[in-house]
Amino acid sequence: MNKALRRAVIAGNWKMNKNRAEARALITEMIPLVKDADCDVVICTPYTDLETALSLTEGTNIKVGAENCHWAPSGAFTGEISADMLTEMGVEYVVIGHSERRQYFGETNETVQKRVRAALSAGLKVILCVGETLAEREAGITEEVIAIQVKIALAGVSAEELSRVIIAYEPVWAIGTGKTATDEQANEVNHFIRSLVGRLYDEKTAAALTVQYGGSMNPGNAAGLLAMEDIDGGLIGGASLKAPDFAEIIRAASR
Ligand code: 13P
Image (cartoon, rainbow, N blue to C red; front, top):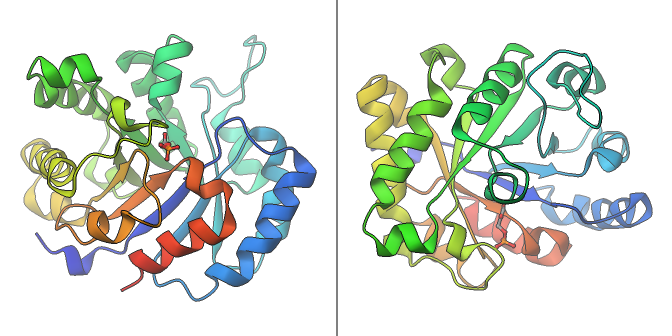
């Protein structure tokens, strides 16, 4: 379905890595390596690195994202950051619903939905993460799990707003484990997500949707994954912390 019409998006998810000095070094090394990318390049960093990332990437092709945001515009939510605070800084993207937040910080499909709404209302672009656990895959309920995650997260999101949403399929069993989904396994779920969006919205909206794969993507497996019809980019953890590796994945996505 029109892969050639979709621009690939390669996004780094730094997770809880890199202090300011380390962030400065990584981004400085990265800038010349990715400047000719023929895909969108995003780095999602800890809140404490956002200012550094924004100032260093000014005038480059690297866009900056955060790794989460709260759903309220402001208020008594100690330790949280609002979507408006991010846009005010100049942040363009935000990751929402990452499996580590679902696993360790009580994130549910309902709170994901609230965060997605808040982020879109604030004008951010959302990288919405979905994915099944190993137990769910082995129980044969991958599609059911993904469908519930996608349907709840996107409830109330208009087709116009969906143009600012990227869905990242990240099988939980492939994250940080070195165990990647095969090209076919990843493409199958990405295709399912696109078809589901086609049913929830329409074919045109589904054809335009960017669906990434994430989970142990690296320079060795990126080209195969990114060549698949329904894989429009990657959400990269570990390999995004090394400039040459990240740049190699970006080269694989540039077409
Ligand atoms: P790894 O690339 O380290 O497996 O992490 C994937 C991920 O969780 C990106 O959000």
